[in-house]
Length: 243
Image (cartoon, rainbow, N blue to C red; front, side):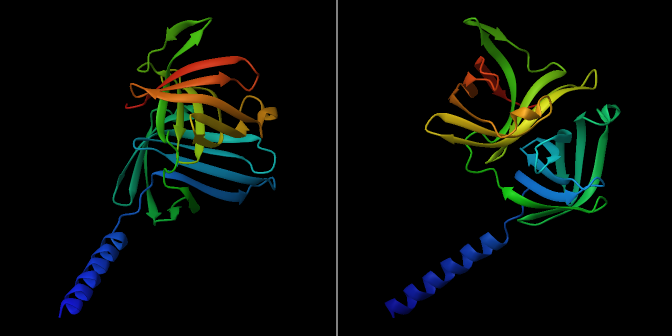
């Protein structure tokens, strides 16, 4: 009798676990990718990163890393309708400030944008990176002195990370200006933050460079130390972006 009760209990636990795992809603959070051939015959890689409130998408030559395009801003999802407020657009800056909505079809591992007929596959769900989310530069050390930077001004340098991907973007929403961007893959292991650059709008010669920095979190801020891709000393402070 006890064996029957135990087996019934285990069976119920398994059923409940399966129910919750199957009923879990798919999430946009993380990184997504799409490959396509453009009109010039270029094999284009498109990578989108979604944090809690912010998103970016970048397109670049999958072979050479030559930068092609990027846009991004805030987002929210209601049912199958995503609404974005554009903060930067490298080809059409006049769109900055516009609010656009479009229909998507989202599963656990696929994202389809109906009108554009774009189909993405999930790269990661925001893990395992310790720094996934959106960050804005709030200061840096120069010649040993800390120089703070307001995070509420229209001009921002933002870095958005998933579990394995990163993109930084410098932009000004008031002037509708794009300053530059770069991105690729990253990892965080034993206090070391490592990047492998896959595209860089200002200088494609930096593509495939691998950089390593010391990092730690202090009072929710990301402290970032090392050398730039030019070899110059770098000591930055990044704060979580909340608005």
